[in-house]
Length: 280
Image 1 (cartoon, rainbow, N blue to C red):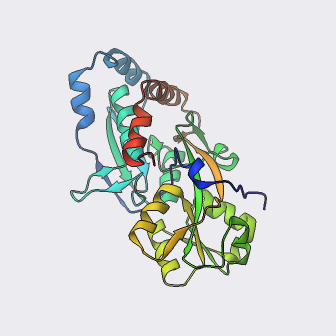
Image 2 (cartoon, helix red, strand yellow):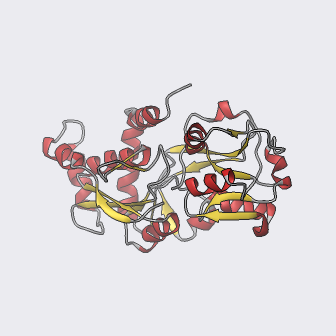
């Protein structure tokens, strides 16, 4: 299969970001406002000039479209606010730019479309950079590497990625590269798309599909919460993740990349990932 890449899962788990689903629009807690008010010595002047140079959907705010049902990347807390790897990285970028982060939660397809059409400033939902998406939106520098894995029931005849050809049905999340790759490799008749990863995993538990292809960190969470499921040692694919924005918005793209460069250099991005995905 042209998309299948098989290697030890443990060696590939260091930085894994995925896709996610729900609806609504809610601002995160006022961490960005507090950071802007305090004006940290490391970045307040740069943040002011960066914010002045960009035009956003709403003045003074940075709208991030996402799909917040994919722990540990995007999650809804009990109080209705959001947390997760992507949320914290987005918050750190907003702080650098002197903007208030607003998280707009919607279906994954809608999150992509919002950024593509300029209804949000950026999409962060474990978005993979591929040629199809590059044709309709611009992307920041990569901030993480994602590994898509295969969940099956314990005792399944599916033992490796190559065995997916034996599956009657493969479950994926709608609009993700997992869906694209699986339909490309096995045909649409053998793939069922669900609105979110949790629904796909429930379908596996119910016997409606034989395997689920999904990103590695959410896969761990789902398997931990559902006895009788296991993740194969054979991975499905390895890919890069970045922030998507409306095509041609060069000023915003440059500002985001500048903030990302600083956050990667000072260890902030890695510390956020380590917080949610501790080293084994």
